[in-house]
Length: 439
Ligand SMILES: [Zn+2]
Ligand SMILES: [Zn+2]
Image 1 (cartoon, helix red, strand yellow):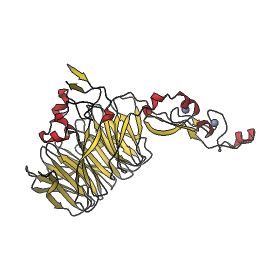
Image 2 (image 1 turned 120 degrees about the vertical axis):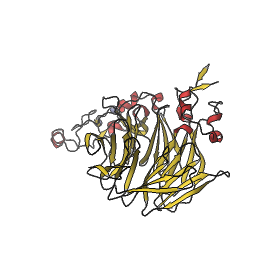
Image 3 (image 1 turned 90 degrees about the horizontal axis):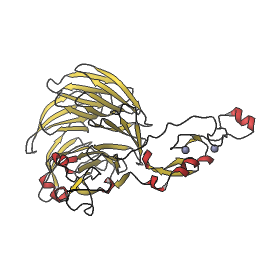
Image 4 (image 1 turned 60 degrees about the vertical axis):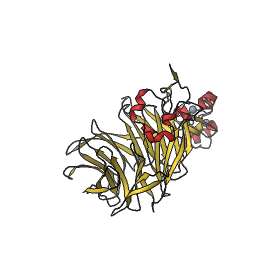
């Protein structure tokens, strides 16, 4: 009989497996090759490298290719072994890698942008290479003809991109803090909507096509989950990072969100609990608790002969309050506040100790992360950074939680567990209440 694991997914903790060093400048992208002990990296040092794990346990470069311009973005399609590299000069280059990962052949150059390429997605079905760039546009080009099919311009640099392969919707984040949802057609596109919520440039996006959830990370250190599938405009705020959120990955089966920030912070968010939306901030000319006027409310200040106060907002109820009526701080994880935020006195009193239980775990990546990607099937994560280092990390559950984890342990990785393992009801590296453990 299958036994439920009741431990929370918080028990996963990253374990560093390998460090890859050799790049001469910041590494902008790193990807794990599925089912291989291999990593592809692209760097500001103008090189793209394929690293394979040798018997010694070390990763050594098997391909080293120098480009015309610093590499700024990358996409890899494993079935066709095609690599797309975006560069600082605006061009996207396509390569084909040999089966043994020892050779890389140049296929095509796509003059996709006038300036640095920020993100690339390849759709094999549409035969499109879609990209965003610092020339403020998203472009999509035909991978057969190499021709530009369409472009759409924004008011600021386009910084990140996600794409729904079934519906041909593209999500583009930009430096103004806005996310635009576009429907791409063969030679045109239409803007469906714009999502506004961040107070800083959008640094990363993640689209989950199954639950139809969009996650965005920004330079305001926060993450927003946009519930597109729910059709009710529900958004959840996740605040736990202390620096720009650089990369996101949502693990659909365990309903965990992994996020990385540029100070090296790695967070694993439990999205399998009911969370509450943070309230809209209310506007008022006087404190909504003690009714003292705020400093711009000159009439009331004059009438009552009082000094105006600064306006603050309670993060839990959204009311406009003065400093005296909101002197306390509390975390409130159910609303996404993993660290202490300002709350009004009555909200503070309403928060119980158990309400402060964290719904995420926080870990140290110990380098300045610019990009992260995961191989969910193997529970592996690769991060790269401005420190020129690439780290391969395993997210594991402590053996005390489940002793039947052998196929999933880092040592057993050589068997390269296929992704169907997930659906077999087997224990995953990211245990949740969904996961069952076969005793
Ligand atoms: Zn007050
Ligand atoms: Zn309140």
